[in-house]
Amino acid sequence: LVAPDGAVRPTIFAEMSALALANDAVNLGQGFPDTDGPAWIRERAVEAIRAGANQYPPGPGIPALRRAIAAHQRRHYGLDLDPESEVLVTAGATEAIAAAIVALAGPGDEVLTLEPFYDSYAATIAMAGATHTTAPLRPTPAGWRLDADVLRSAVTERTRVVLLNSPHNPTGTVLTREELDLVARHARRVDAVVVTDEVYEHLTFDGARHVPVATLPGMRELTLTISSLGKSFSLTGWKIGWVSGPAALVTAVRTVKQFLTYVSGAPFQPAAAAALDGGDADVADLAGSLAARRDALMAGLTRAGLRVARPDGTYFVCADASGLLDATGLPDGAALARALPGLAGVACVPLTAFCRPGGPTNDALAPWLRFTFVKDEATIDEGVRRLLAFA
Ligand code: PMP
Ligand code: GLN
Image (cartoon, rainbow, N blue to C red; front, top):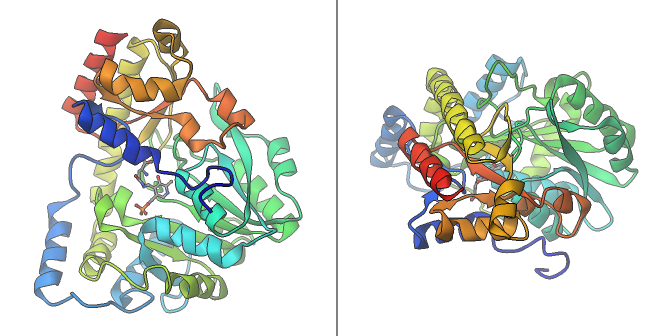
């Protein structure tokens, strides 16, 4: 299982965080906030523990959280969901993705993702025994964009699932309504289910608006929408995620989920319900402060000689580091990312960690690095100072 195409391998995030630690480097690699989410939400988890929420919660998640998820989808997107049958709580978005892919795809089926793609996708598709196909995003002056012809030829009669991600890790792209319409049209053409990872749904900048695929005409019945508490509320370690969609699809995911984790996060579930019900202002504050930190990091990377692509959302900015490669004589971004903690005292992630090994996108993105800006301003400034001293 671990062998075939290298899809199931140690995650790059663990490797880079270990290198950062060993070299006392500023860690702009793994995307996790260095400031915990709102104290009032954390307090709710403490209260829940004291009140006895310490045994297995109900399989689909506690009713209050399922209701809060349904209310969130209605309030933000006008989507109506039955919290009883159309919402499932999972151990983070990661489990929702894994359970959905295992439920829907197997040997002989193709699962299509964008490329670059979040690293769990390739591993999960491999574990399901399905075939991973990709539609590469292209860096253009208007951001990383999905080309209509690329998508048309990528969606085949064997495509069972289109596993989408917007706002997109690692590029920070927020897919446009037109791009999503194209995805929807081709998914319908071959009767594929769209599984959409929207964990950065609220972390968009400069007026970019996230559009859930499920809101497109005819797509509600064909779409499983996944999100989680971690990114919106800076509580990534709580691992509370969810999936929503038509009852038959959610039931299939739930059936698999039973045998992955069964249930999880008993005291975090009531706190997550409170966060979703009452935390919109906290989320908006985070998005606003992230935009400023993005600008600071982009400006610093540019001064250090990297060619930066402006992200419209997420935690991440990607940069072409060809200049640093020339200066160091290192062969590619993977080598540079592994050397930088020791050379410059800064950790980041090579973009090829999000590509199929040896494929054309891997080659095209070989000089690219991903940096996270979900760190406090002093940390970002120190990272930039070190890069400038090195470059
Ligand atoms: N999807 C994407 C695109 C991500 O960046 C992450 C990051 N952590 C996840 C899923 C996992 O989310 P969770 O921690 O809720 O499992
Ligand atoms: N999603 C985070 C990132 O892309 C990391 C999460 C993880 O380490 N699995 O950096």
